[in-house]
Image (tube, rainbow, N blue to C red; front, side, top):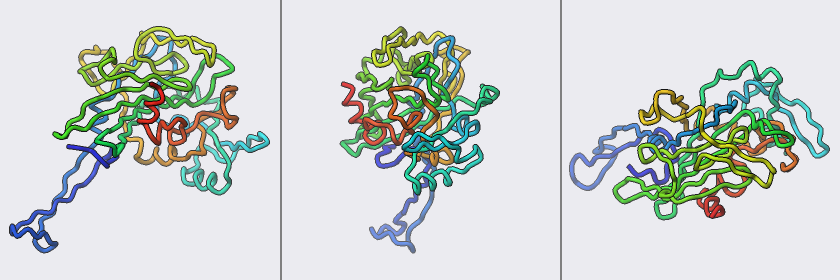
Length: 313
């Protein structure tokens, strides 16, 4: 079934049937029924397989892992960091605060966080974007990590990474993948679907996750990153995560939760542009502590995925 115009989610569709065959459907002559359509099935069809290095410590997780173990601090023009909310605060209170104060706030992870390590289920946040341009659809898979633990000075709390798959919606309601983009550091890489080297069952691309930085790569190997003067190691010789057990991957695959990014309760938090996801000491930042939420990512990653992919050509 085509998904044009609908974000990922579950919908109730109402059908009117002309029971008297007079070409005039009215409330009196129509029969109404409902059907549940779960459009996250499209995200499942192309859900990536994530391959990590053997020594990786942090994996994609739910945002609650950051929220439950952080206070929220404000950052103002003179650089004063002050706790404004504890971990029990509601999303709406934070939203109201930033809307009224014009300040940037950020999660500051507790020193006790290590005691929660491994308690949360690996999670990937999926999103379907209809471009309204000739039946082009974009699937985005966002990965949240509690820490990017590259060596100083660029280690920081919180890390949002993602990949985007561009699809063409065909007249028969099926989809054809066109190209794929993987984000990494301050940019990324885009390739035609036909040039993605590793895919399981023909639709699930491999993503090789760089150790500690969590940058995404198409192949196993090492890559030098000039902007931080560091090497990314992305061998994929450790943990493997997929959205379900896939026989071809072997018995040791762990399963992640694939959830719609636009659903509550997590959407309320992700949809706060002024909220930064952790403290940061990296000199490449803009002085506002921590990585921004997906909705505030630059280079049109969120607002125009096609334009972002074009910029990587």
